[in-house]
Image (cartoon, rainbow, N blue to C red; front, side, top):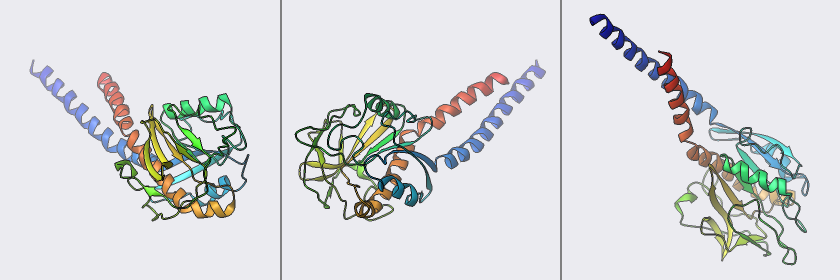
Length: 262
């Protein structure tokens, strides 16, 4: 009886020690992995400057590094949340003089966000005579043909966090056609009058960042680059916050397997 008790105690101590080691080893690995974000940009169909400028200049922000891949495929066959963290829908890639997207592309965006990715969209041309459909969004939102502006007003929403302050203090954003009449699920982060300049929408395990920033030529992209850096940093930290439960889930599975092996 004493020997059985000692054996059981030994197993208990062993399990506790291994669990402690697992936590110590796993969390640094998770922390290191979280500093690298892979970005898929849908671009180069409308403007030839946006995607190259971002992928060349926005590579490291504080503790995050960004790796880019550029695709011209409107079906977004590569948009898999298992392979990429962030999906950037470039200038005019959805609407420019009419609808340019595909049903497959819209479905791919929805699935990407549903599975934990974050989708950022840049200004899309909204022609009042044609409109700009939004089947790639899970909640209603209307585009509006508006004048180009550079001013904006951050909202009081707590979700604004560091969007206009880190790593740069943002006072100017070049925007054009904007968004309005949003579903109540959208969280406005910046506005001009009754129009959205930036908004956040949670969906599934991921999120959308809806913007009206205009990157149609090199001057505008360069002007918006400080905000784009802020946007990428904001999205990286947002995604880590959304997916914070994942490491614990993985640890629980490992812990269960560990107990069974002892």
